[in-house]
Amino acid sequence: MRRAKLTTKKLAQRIDLNYFKRSHPFRRSRFILSVGVPLLALIWLGWFAINRNNRVYSSGKMSASHAVLTERCSSCHVKEVGVFSSKTSDGACQTCHDGPIHHANQVFTPNCATCHREHRGAVRLAATSDASCTQCHANLHATGTVTHYARNIDGFNSSHPEFAAVRAGNIDPGTIKFNHRVHLKTNLAGPNGPVQLACGDCHRSPDSNEPVRFGSQPARAGSVAPEREPPSMNPERAYMAPVSYAQHCMACHGLQFDKRFSESAPHDTPEVVHAFVVERFQRYIAAHPAELRVTNSDPNLPQKPFPVSPRVLTPPQWVSERVAESEQLLWRKTCMQCHAISFPASQPLPVVAKSNITVRWFQHAVFNHDKHRLLKCEDCHTAARTSQETSDILLPGIKTCEQCHHSGSEAAEARCFECHIYHDWRKEKPAQGNFGIFGQKRADSVGKPALNSTME
Image (cartoon, rainbow, N blue to C red; front, side):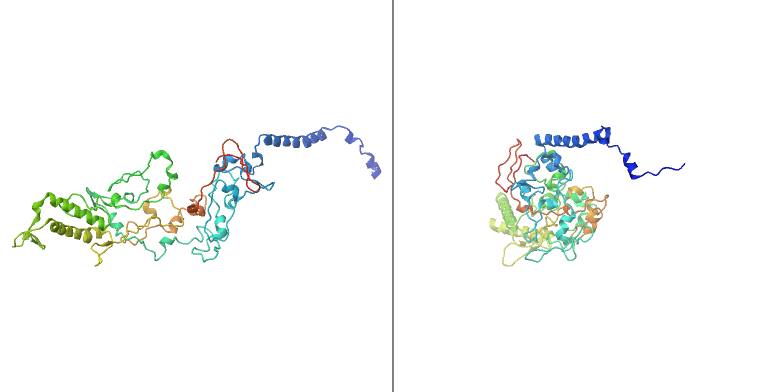
């Protein structure tokens, strides 16, 4: 049977013109949602506004140090000239923190938020990205002068130069004569018999609690119980204290100057040592006047006296001769074993060169021995056991550090901030606190941050 052809008119007649006049569940639900959802959103926002809680507007969680400001957006996002800014200003940051500049001749000073980005969760704001550093150091320039640092560094594992202290041609500027190889050998003669020295017997942090084996235990002023803070948070455990004669050397290397005395000469300047020796002999001869009668002996045959009459000296003469003999032993033998000593003809006493012991080798980087204590000392200071010269610099080079500090999730942190700091904290200024714990607001002039009162 042939099907009739549908015309436009017939199709139009099929349209129900009363469709939208009749109620329908789908249209009713759509209307409720289109009106109800915005209304609920307004009520929700109104609830936060009534309670003065701005958390709903946050773009992410705050860092641990700023978590207390989570509901106080205006502490950082301030109103300036009647306009609420989404970006933080340096003035808002400097209300609590004073971040000194990096170098006086830097080309530009980045905004605080450029390097320290908030709303990324409970992260360390000091853990800045390498991009914050390489924006300058990948092509370093300075204003008004020539830079003295490497000009193109874009990462620790790529273009970082060798550490300055261990570059070819550098030597230890210290003048103390020391041989690591001799002091690390087995069966070394100690004060009470053979000993085996370890690195920690001489190299230890100022806050170390380990007893000193071969010297006097230093007194730590104001020290309190060890549990006062976690070790990793104590800056006194980061660097090694300079080697001290009293703590590390005295037990084996005494300064005896005459068999009449059990005590040693002080480890001090020649003037102090001379005065000490003179005073001891003066006190001794006053108590033993019989020794003023002196019998000469052949210096080559000490036990064979000369066939001459004994001499009787005055106390000053006796003291002068004994002091000369003792100081000959001290200056020419005992002290000279470790110190560089000269004998100017115009001076009665010798001149001892300054020890010049380097306290901190990396002047432009930070390092924490305490955080590396799981490693053996010789894993980094590989040449210590074989070193015989004072001039040897026994620091690890960059290749040693790169064994652990490199890219990858299994490696130790290798970003710039781990070893370098940006702000010159020697120029820090004390911040003037403007926050309280009772919700007060500070009245500021127009154009300055109007900060909610809180406490970090």
